[in-house]
Length: 173
Image 1 (cartoon, one colour):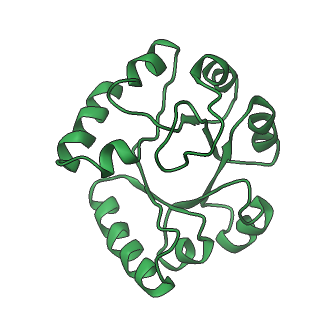
Image 2 (image 1 turned 90 degrees about the horizontal axis):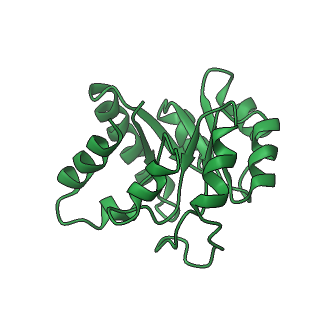
């Protein structure tokens, strides 16, 4: 499925909610899911499909109380141990990485696809490869068996966001 994540960590609450509501309409039209990064309040107010939480964000149990049982909650895992922990805590999906050096999180240790993709393949819930994915390295992930990827800066820094998004979708379909 296509999943669009709103990741605006510093935007004021009112602006973020307005943007989330606009994206909610667009994602419904496109038959895509809307996930809000970190901000459970914005996800609930905008009727997003779910929220993605990092290791230092609100605990999944608290997010579930706020969002209810029907919304998706994704967690981030940067190691095989964290992947197993996210699964046991009830995540609906897991972002697994860092696959490659990422401009959005340059300080994270890169574990790499050779270690993380095989571990994700054994996980019974959907796992998305995350971290530094671009045109130059996506084939490496696919050859190792990645079924789902999350792409951020390769798309948002592109001169033609729509064309770049379409390119990645074609790679996966």
